[in-house]
Image (cartoon, rainbow, N blue to C red; front, side, top):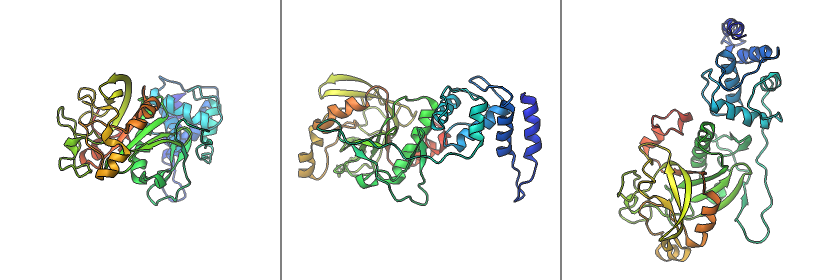
Length: 346
C-alpha cells in the first residue's frame, strides 16, 4: 500500500498548479484518503508517506506536531483531538472515515463554550470577551476550540503574551506534558502592584482566577516592583521563566504550598531543588500592596495573597501547567515550547 502511495505522491508533487507551483502536499493527502478508502488503517507505530499525509492534515487543523512520517504519541493525541472536533469517534486511529473528513475543507471553528458564573461563592469566573484581532495575533486552535490571544485583554493579559502561552501549551499538550486544561499564565514583565497571574480553563474559555503574584528579590535587586532579570541558579532568589508543571501540595511554614517542576533545562529545571513553590505571603496582600505601591519580594517563589492562595492551589495542583513570561532573549530563542517547539533546550 505504502509503495503505491509513494509513487502517486511523487508523480503529483511535480504536477504544476495554476500559479506554477507544485501541489504535492494537498494531493498527497487526497491520495492517502483514497488509499485508506480501501480499508487500510493508520495507527500508532505506522510509518511512511500515508502517515506524513495524515500529519499534514492534522497541522492544517491547528495541531502542533512534527510532519515526520512516524505515527507516535504526539500524532495520536493530535488525531484524537481533531476527531473529537469533527464529530468522529476519537479513537486515535485513522481509517477511511477520518481521512475522508480530513481531506475536505477544514470546519469553521467555534468559539470556546461559555458557562454561566457559579451562584454564590466558589471560583471567580469571567467569560472570555470577543476581542479585536490584531494583525499578527490570529486565533489559535487549542483543544478543538478557537482561542484568541486577545481574549482576556480587558483583564490586562496582553495578547502578545497570551499568544505565546497558547503556542507553548499546544506544544506541551502534543508532547503529553499534561492532561489538564487549567492553564496558569504569569506576566513578570508587568509591575508587581498589578494583577499579573491568570488561571484559565482552556476547555471552556473561562477565566478562573486573576490575582497578584510576587517575584524573587534576586530578580528585582533595587526593589522597584519590576523584574530586571530571571534565573535558575540555586540561592540566587530569582524568579523562573518558561513552562513549569504543578506537583504535590504540602503544609509548610507558609501553610498550604504547592511544589513545582521546571520543564525547561537551563531556564527552570532547578525549580524543585530551589524550593520554588506556590505559597501564601502577607506581602502580596491587597492592603500591603496599596500601601507601598508594590508587592513584597519572595526568594523566587510565585507567592500569592493569603486570601486566595488555597483556592488557587486547589485549582491548579497535580499536573497543570504554568507559563511564566519575561522577555529573556535566550529563552525566547531557545525555549522547547516556543517557535513551534523547535527550541534547543530539552
